Length: 147
Image 1 (cartoon, rainbow, N blue to C red):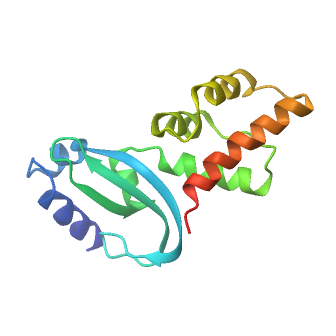
Image 2: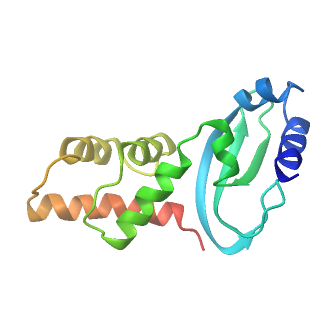
Image 3: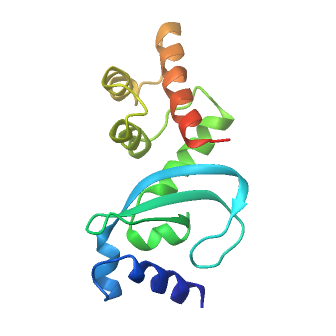
């Protein structure tokens, strides 16, 4: 039932009226961890990991849960897992999907991005490198966690 409700709501906002075509119109626009639980378009409550999707053809936006967004083959699950890992241990690295998404959205500078790519797989960092890495991690965490 809930999947039917999701497809019905998104078809209203899509150019195509065939689900297999319409779902290709949608792209991940933003991700957010919310303090107050929300309800997904499918009707599921509560959702705390919210994904904003945008229709490339109609410019319509929708807020859906992290489970429903998987129907669009998006990378939100990897982003949320990476962020959760960095929250527990700030010295950990975000994954490449999270870093690329942050770059595309302008959350991190080009200089931050290039630095992070350079040190992404390194095991040992200087104090200065670790501080910069934590700073970049914090930029991403602050952007995803909105109050």
